[in-house]
Structures are given as C-alpha cells and as structure tokens.
Image 1 (cartoon, helix red, strand yellow):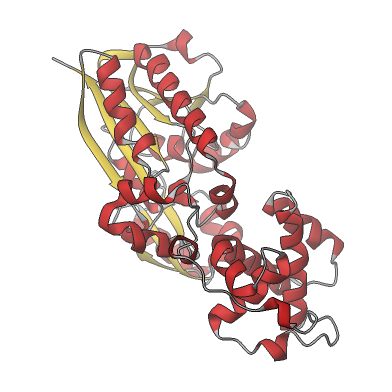
Image 2 (cartoon, one colour; image 1 turned 30 degrees about the vertical axis):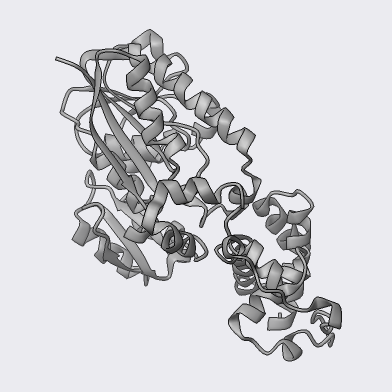
Length: 384
C-alpha cells in the first residue's frame, strides 16, 4: 500500500470507530477484509488510527471536522506534511482538500486533547504537572517488560531478548522493568517471552506491586485480577500462596497458561470469602483508566461524569467488601490506573472516615512524566 492508500484505510477505520465500533474490532475487521495489506501496512494503519484517537480534539480542529477524514487531515497538518501530495485523489489516495476543510485553532483544552468536563478535575489532581501530563498522553506509550526473576536475572533476560533482535534498557520505576527500545512488535513471538522469562507489563504497574510488602508463606489475594498481570508479578516475588479472583472470570481465562509459562502457582477462586482470611489483599479496582489513555484513547472520550460517579461508588463498595477478609495484621493494597483524586486520595480518605481503626501508611502516585502509565497505590492496615 502507498502512504496515501494507508491514509484512506485509516479514514475508513476511524469512521467506523466514530460510529461506535470498538477500535480493536474496527481494525481487525478492516484487516480481515483487506487481504492485500501486508503486516507493515496493518501496523501503519493501526498507528495512524491510534494517533488520531489520542489527539481527536486537536486533530478535528486542524482538520475542520470530527470525521475520519478530518482527523487524518488534521494530523497531517499538525505534522506540517505536504497535504496536496497525500490528498491527491489519485489511485487510492483521499480526495483533494476543499475550501470547507479549513483548519481551526483549537481551544486550550482541545489543544491538550482533554475533555472539557474533565479538565478542572485533572487540573486539581495534577496541579503544576497538568499540561505536561496531558501532552504526554497525546503520545504513543512505550512498551515495557517485567523480568520474571523466578526464571532469569535481568541481564540474562536482556541477552535472551537480544537473540531475537529485541533491544531493551532498564526503567527506573522497578528493578524488574525493561523498556523496549527496538522491535517491540517481536516480543510476543520471542523465545524469551514464550519461555516465560519476561511478561508484558507497564513499569508503573510493576512499581505498584513492588510497593506491596510480601513475605514467604503468606496467603495473598488478587481480588480484581483481570488478566492477572499483577498476580503473576506477586507470585514471582516469593513463596506465597496466591489466589486470584475477578467479578468476570472470563478476564482470567488466559491466566492458567500464563502462570504455567511463568513457572508459578496461582489458585483461581470464584468465592474468595470462603478461603479467607488473607495476609495481603490487592484490589486493582475498576476505574476511569485515565493513567493509561495512551493505550486506550477511546476510553478517554467515552468516559462521562455519570460513569465516573458510578466507578467511585463501586470502588468504595469493593473496599468495604474486601476489608473484612484481611487478617488482623494484614495489608490491604488499593490500586488504580487513574490520576484523578476522586478515585485515589479522596477514595482512601473516605474509607478511613467510614471505617474506624484503619490507617494508610503509604500512598504513591505515578504519572507519565516518570516514563510509564499513570497509577496510584495506597496501603491500608488496621491500627495497633
């Protein structure tokens, strides 16, 4: 495919997404219907689509419309590309630009690709870092790996990855974190990945697990396990008896195979109350995902004030439900991939107000300015 034909394909996919289709589904359907497209073409179209979704408001302003064509045109204008060359109408290229497609100057929040209603909340939550963080969220997220110390040292894992042409560097947030600097798309077919030496996991997500105190012999519950990335990371840290639970068990369907590949034991439970109490409980609660909008830009635009209110209520409900499952001297770890105070510091403050006899000895927030995704972690223990 020519560069111009890739633009036309991205426009087609974006129009489907703007009509309500999930991004991954729209890309998959396009790929299946476009057998002529090689892997390089598919990757290029995917990158165009996700770049446009991350920068939807500003690209729509520069392109004159919030349509697939407007987003792609706006992205090219933002880059200073030769529009006439790419929007030529020749072959499979998009039709030439007309006078009605003039660029507009985006407002301050639009220039940062921030929803208007969320701007004040994020400004309050991020303070002086607001602008820099929002600019960072407009960029593609790096790829990170977690070295599985059950099977390899960091140095050995890097060497194994290098055998498949994958270059990495250490990431400061966690001693097990590697940032992929070359050939990230080769990771999942590499020998290091397939043999369980490394797992795909954001560096800040790894740092959240690092903040949780674990000791050999403890009973540990990952209550909102999802795909199980944090459960695997905890299991790799020592000889603990680890249980994983999720409200939707389908999210954990790959966890047994991933645990086998990693060489760790995880017990999946649909009734964690039955096997309580636990020495450590992690609740990585459902949240806005504002810290990971680089990876899920569609989520940024889909979030509403009503949905955020629902999420905050659910987070409080989970906290209150799980707390009784903790042993008297145990540690409850609360985590989100959010940067909003409503879901983080305010949620912990509300819990401490509702539940007497608890303290929070640690609270830590991560933002993309540290190189990885945005996360929050708080530890909760009983007094005395």
